[in-house]
Image 1 (cartoon, rainbow, N blue to C red):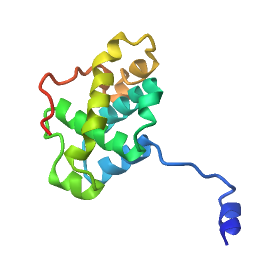
Image 2: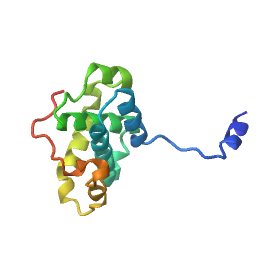
Image 3: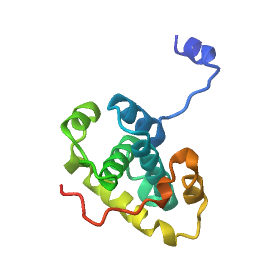
Length: 139
C-alpha cells in the first residue's frame, strides 16, 4: 500500500519547511499579509546561520518568526488563539525568538543581501526595511 501511494504521488515528497508552517499558521489565525511576509523574511534570515537554524524544528522557527513579526508590527507577540492553534506557548519559543531576533538585528551588517533585496520589493510589502522593535518581548 505504501508503495502504491508513493507511485501515485510520483515519489514527489518533501518535508515541511518553516515557510509551510508560517503560511498555515497565518491562514488559520487570519493574520495580516504583512505579518506573514515579515515572518517569512525572518525565517529566511535564520538560514544564514545554519548551525543554529538546524537546532530548531521548522514549526518552532515559524512560530517564533510570527511572534517577532507581530511584536515588530505593534501587536501582542503571542495570544491565546495562537497558543491553541500551534500548541506552543511563548515560553517554549523563547530560544527561537532570541535567535531570530539576533538575526533580525544584525541583518543589515551581513555581507549577503539577497534575502533583504527579495523582501524589499513591493510584492512583499517592503518588510526587509522594517526595523526590529526596541522593546523586548516579555516571556
